[in-house]
Length: 153
Image 1 (cartoon, rainbow, N blue to C red):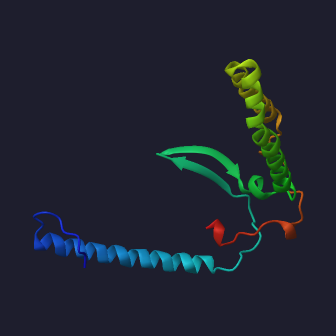
Image 2: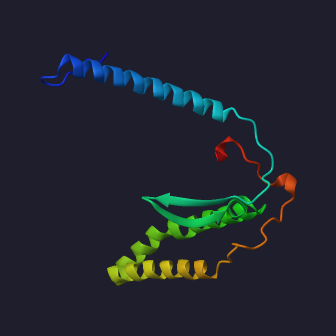
Image 3: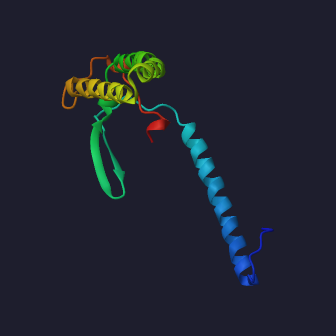
């Protein structure tokens, strides 16, 4: 099955390795077939409860987030996206010009101060951002609420 040979490999090793490679290929084909079936699932119904997700990494469980906080309010994504796009234009787009101007007039310390000020603005905005955990976030009608699709699985 494989043309690659290792030095001093035995026939038993080669046969076992070829069998393993065959099994791995079959497993990959089966996984792809199951993924294709999952993508073809029809949309599910509206969610009946507020699911809670947590991230986990290396045996540690992280912060909890409610499904409704991810997709609940009708305009939440639009508002967040608008702010993100405008911020990227004004801070990200102008940052090289501001940094170049500060560097040429005041030196590298001014550029560092500019970055610190930008970080401070972000920290203050995050501190005063309203927390929606345990709050009422369902301001959209049930018809416009997201339904669980195959991407939720």
